[in-house]
Length: 260
Image (cartoon, rainbow, N blue to C red; front, side):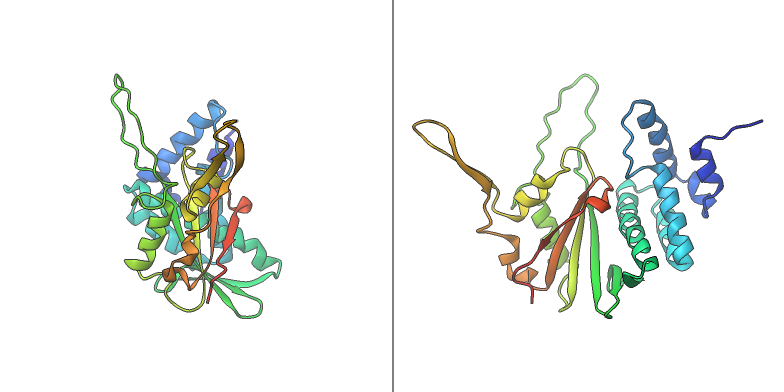
């Protein structure tokens, strides 16, 4: 008798078996076993969940699942593009239960409008534009020490969350239509995961005031004087949703007080 482990069982039930053999899926498969053996498995974003989530989408809407599968196949050797597609899969799949429970009407895919469209029961639609932030760290030589400068939390650096968001508006013309637009940001690296990266970049930064005589902290917190929402380019952006390492259920949302 051959007893298959959970990974093999999930693969047997996967609706797109050809995808299992592409580079992206094989790397995730190897990573799943390695991280599980070392107690480092991410329970939200991993190989098994990728298969299960695509199955769930296929059960809800076969054509939408085929769309994701086709894009993964087309980008099979481009790790970052596939990671961005996985982010969309995570977000899409999270809303399926809400459809079944009657909390939202339906989920739509229309690449000409946004990544994912959520239609509520009252007919109002929310347009979600999803992007996955991953620092581009160089691979160091085994015998060398490399100092990596992370700038994701800053305000003016091109690698910052703020500038990535503004480029979506300036270059890709996203969030420019007068409707309920949401930017959905996944922080997809342990080095940048957490509130600090997003809140620091979208505000003026985290500030600590020190008493010069006692050198004790008087106050500390984020300075929102130069909030990204004060930039007129974000007037049609209703809010910014962000989550860490695939955990969309623990997402947080910043609402734009100047939304038109």
